[in-house]
Image 1 (cartoon, rainbow, N blue to C red):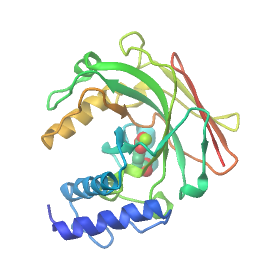
Image 2 (tube, rainbow, N blue to C red; image 1 turned 30 degrees about the vertical axis):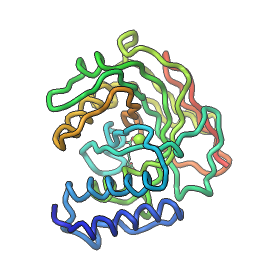
Image 3 (tube, helix red, strand yellow; image 1 turned 180 degrees about the vertical axis):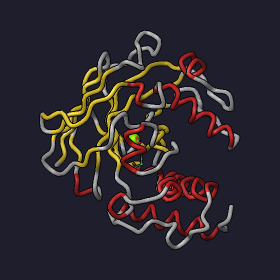
Image 4 (cartoon, protein in one colour; image 1 turned 45 degrees about the vertical axis):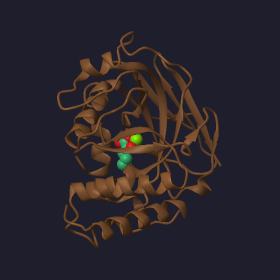
Length: 262
Ligand code: OOG
Ligand code: MG
């Protein structure tokens, strides 16, 4: 850690209020170039504490930058993790108000729900599949608090990995019954196909994303508890949306997830 607790707290309040007030800010490493990985996750933890103190419930965890498409789009190469909230959940087919967001983008993701704790190091696709209750289709709506979505890895970790909203689909399947590597995903905006991928786009297998999350948390002495919802990261690049857009993601075996932006 290179920042003191007071600075961590100040930066957490800065980013959390930017989210609540839908305000863009410059990336925090501009003013704090010395900020390290531990500081970045400490700021994210502090944001979580601020929200929980306000009564917000953490609804699950998310991995980000797990596909080549996302890494290329954002110009970074390491996966990162964050958390999702109860207020971020939008019903399938529901409406998302763009006035509540800064510059939203959508990502099609495969989500997991665990039935046993996962603790790294040493987690791999096999351990994850054995600990998976079911998989389900999801669309994450990300909304970086940074101007033009321009950030470095440490700044985006501190900003809770651009977490904003998410929509889960209704079809739950056991992870072992389907070929998650070959699972095709088609992302559509206003009826037009804007991106396509298969499950293998995420670290070779979406369960690898959950394994990596368990291993990253393990480095900090933490684990993924049983019953945790995990978004494994966008399979394609993220697509910008605006009021009036209708987004639909079709997942082979898992059905469709859709939403409308107003
Ligand atoms: C960071 C969050 C990335 C994903 O699925 O890759 C993410 C960002 O691109 O703003 O959620
Ligand atoms: Mg995502």
